[in-house]
Length: 186
Image (cartoon, rainbow, N blue to C red; front, side, top):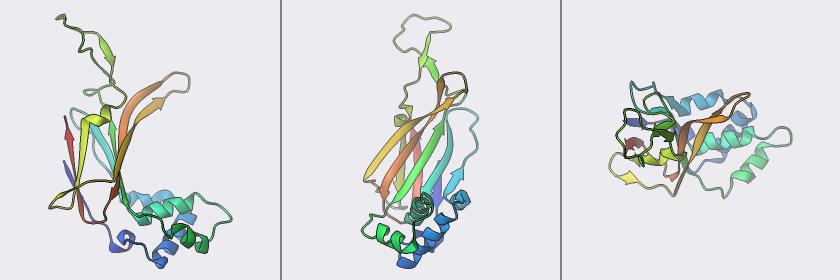
């Protein structure tokens, strides 16, 4: 699967100009996250296999607007400019992967060698997302992020235990360029 992302230049400029920081500040101060919709791509579920549910591509502009939205009251555009100065800018990419009926939370126990029609099931490892490789390229070469991490995603019932529902992979420190994402599952 390949996703090509290109956004208007203004929110993608880096380093952010003072004008762009002010714009991101005011956008965040609206406390309306609907602007993030243009930074998230939702994908349909597959017929089989894991569901690559969404890909979020946050530019420095979008990240600073999110940062600004965390403040209510005594936060000004001038303080936003001061907070941003010296702040390292990068693109943050998040890929959410959900379990499905064909790629579920329970898997056959590989340690059981007996041939049975239904081997005992064990929980899929909580960091199954490590089985997925996300590649980011500029169309010519693969770019290496300065950092990457992931986390399990759980669905918790009102009265029952939390159950795994998927995982999220994060890629940090990607230079601002026209990027292509590739997903590979081992």
